[in-house]
Length: 366
Image 1: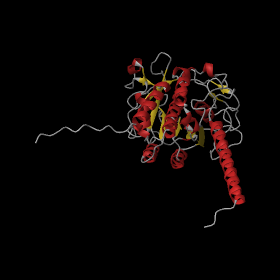
Image 2: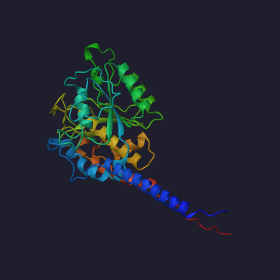
Image 3: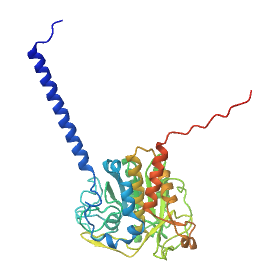
Image 4: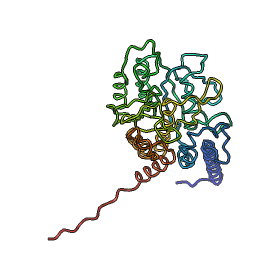
């Protein structure tokens, strides 16, 4: 076999050098691109001017929890999908919702007003650290698919649509109130006077079967005792309201049908073009818990941990902050706490990745 001539050897060496440089350059670009996805450090984050007044998020230790959960894996993870089923339109162009709502959102109007859905979406997902307005409870790493509903049929269709889309969480600030007010649909036209519409309950139960989607619903505002539902063992979380005294709010439904309570004070949401803190309601404590479920799903996915909707529900409920005064009106003794949840998630991930322990064999006598 003939050896390569000096010229050929030199040309081959040059080609190898060029290939090496190209690969190095591509790797450098990839590294920069990855770094660009990283969120700013706490020192670099912009302010949310109204955050100082968002007492509910501060009471639940949102900032401290984010500092624990926003490790490099979480920051580089794909955005988490959240479904919101509510009444009324939402302004996509609100400064705190830019790039938050996906184009597939069903809003059905080009001129949104001051709606229930606008307010709830802001509580949940208003952008964080953007030097504007309020901070959503999950104002980063999230995208929202909004479904505007006008009837029970709309709700059932939306549940199925969102589960099929693979959302991690569905927020339904529609309540379990007294007849017809249950779903906050047009009460004058309501023809189904039952506390939790049986068709909706069936749709939720069917959707949750075999799905990792967590469904979060508000308990309602009639200060009535509510019983557990058939879906209580699945990924359904029903949220009540707790006041500043640590008691069940005077309007909130309560009892064994409530999964957890969240603070109803200092909750801020969005108007069509601005910001407001409305009269408390369980509709507005619910997105605080939906955000917790989204945080949990985001963190577990980022760390390659397989989970079920029941896992997330269990992590949220077992990490609740003890509230002894809640037991005056409820069997649920705790309120939402993001920091406790963050610690529970870290422990869950750590135990999941630990190799299984082998039991020592006990020698048998012969």
